[in-house]
Amino acid sequence: MVTFGAGVLAAAVLGGCLPGTGSAPRGTRDNSSTHTTPEVMEWLRANPRVKFHFTPTSATWLNQVEGLFSILTRRSLRRTSFASKAALRRHISDFLADWNRNPTPFVWTKPARTIIRHRRRMLARISRTVH
Image: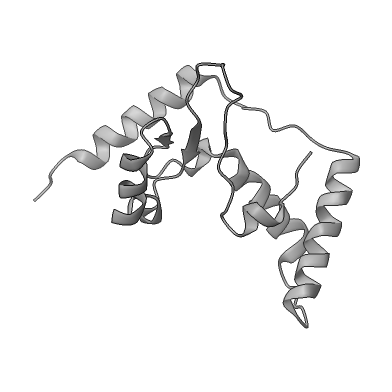
């Protein structure tokens, strides 16, 4: 099920662990510069139990929510206009409610070995200095 609560929309959600689990709270972030500002890094130093894991640069394909955003855009938002932010929110909420009635899981269509091989080949190609 996909939901975006008020805390998520306000970027006010921080995951936690149940007492006694021994695990540190963890979060996965894309490599956006907003996640590594001095303020964020200072907060992380002040909260050493919290761990952020960053996806590699240019690897939005690893972030499955990007796939959902693409679907939302293609199936529902493109060539659409809204009279207000409230109308846009209702439209997105209606789309997500419909999506959740008949959810489609995201499935990798290539084996990990193939993805990694192609990624390494691309990195080798773009890393060469050509003059």
